[in-house]
Image (cartoon, rainbow, N blue to C red; front, side, top):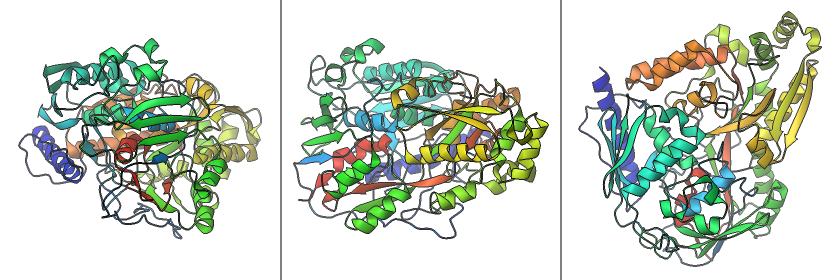
Length: 593
């Protein structure tokens, strides 16, 4: 049964990859082993999203009764692209570090810079018409990949790819040795990869263009860990350009990749600048001569610059419907791309310390949250209340109706029951209950609004809340690194079960397991989930894991919102709103003016 399920999964994945490859030439269609006919779209280990909306802003599982969608992007142009010009798109701050592989959580604004220079084996799609919101994996530096058997993954590397012509690499060809080195390094250094690392037996270059990864046992989500994990944790690099943590302090010497742009300059607090790679391996790309990324922490400043024509585009980072809606009214010429949310806001709490070591307190706080009111009043109905943090686009998504009634109630607004539980836990009327909430203003508006909502909801119930607002770099090196007390708000990108189960509930390390969860039954279920390639079993285990997590309220999950990206009317080829795939639009964007 397992073997047949594995083959069905491999075949379905092949179809997804083939479609992406056809739409993103010159990448050839990836190959997989001969397989039986797939019978379902729930494909463990494949692209984290295989269901995509037919048109922006996308189809939600639980649509708002009164949706207010943004305007759809214009149809892909058939005009011949023009070369030249400087494309300007802002970010919110300087990188806390220059090595994505050692960051506790590589932030989207850092990934934006990283994607200019470094490329990955495969990445979420989104640039191929007619669906700019697609998150199906498409090949990048990998020309193809397949499982030789359930524990042996073979990756073929594109031939003729050259590193940037800068010393000490000097434009040499990318080889399988570079890929093997980079994968071993990211597995060793980046916290997001730690769960997958436990399954790895070896990563070796079989020949000049072939990498073989041997696993100790089957891992249903390993490909998502390798490909998407690698997206978040940097890219393929040359060992001689750096490779140690200490050598990454100066991007002018260590940032040498294969990407469409080359690092030119970073002025702290001002901007980062990237020049066109004249020897890029994709013929004819990129189109623009330079990409400038101004550093603008304040959203009103970014939008004012966009209105004034000083920026060509705005990524989804920091945009909400509350900001987009008035912009459309005052600047209707600005193009808006809207896609269902693939970055989820959530709050963790230290369940190994009082007061959150008591499940009654966690359940009470959850029932104090009127999530539907938040979605309607703050996000104007542009949000969907969900049970857990698996995206509604993912085949393993579990909506509220999928929870048993006795567990579903913890996602519902039940203030009377919450007050009763608090009293039962020794906090009548919230008296004596003190909470510290860790957060940063240097993040998305949705995260800030969610934190404000948590504070207001708890204070109304008599709970004393002390907000601990930090600048982003401090926040990244404390809360995001798991060094905090009380509660904290953060986010998870590309939230599919394979990417997040271990991150938030494993006992691997506090960087991922911010709640310090120690639940033997949950760990058993997760281990079984990751160890199976049986489709039906994966679906059931995913459901059981999410039910248990919600029953114990190990995290608090915000409603899913749309994300938005903006561009000027003269911008063409800017179809991806996800910074993890910034390389896609960076290589194809051009200016029609």
